[in-house]
Image (tube, rainbow, N blue to C red):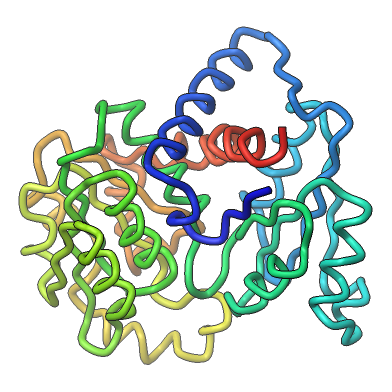
Length: 301
């Protein structure tokens, strides 16, 4: 029994296996062929944070794999009335075959997993978003081949997505260049741990330096869920960190642009970039379904 709380919970070989299965299941779906390795299995989906892509991709994914997904919002369950996380983990483990959790504090997912006897998947916390990195690497490799040895440029907030790209540098072997404003950098301990495992990571405050000759440029909103009161302050701090045509011109001519969505055109990315020829954000969004199906099969079949 395995959990998936960060990308480092699986080995590089296991990550490769998951993406290989995702590619095969995507092809089978397009060909109209059924793939139902989770027949009779049930996935509980606990949500503290709003969601479009995460809920739809996991719910549809379980259906296509032959199983069933059960949506649970913290505000309408006993979790929202103060039931200890440890108790909920024990109760749900006796009724379902797997659990995904989308919440704020990463510690809550860790505590749930500690007391669960079924696989637990981190579907996003304030610390990491590992399912998105599986998706993004899957998407890049569909378009350009292996990401190993390529250069990924992250421009923006040192948030959960930046942390997940840091872990991904360990798992998938790409060079990572991070550009953040001062005061908004990723967790230094996480970067140090990744470097100790051999990851090639550079931190800068200059977006153009990060993007220079990059194979992939990616970003996220400047104010994530729970940071809405900081929006005006962050807009000032992130001046110069918008990914626009000028920034993309410093990347390789065939560089791809990604964004985990939802996006704020005119803030972290210009409309001509996200809607332009180098953008693969819509394929990236669709691929949440396929990458997570590979993950669900790996953990639950």
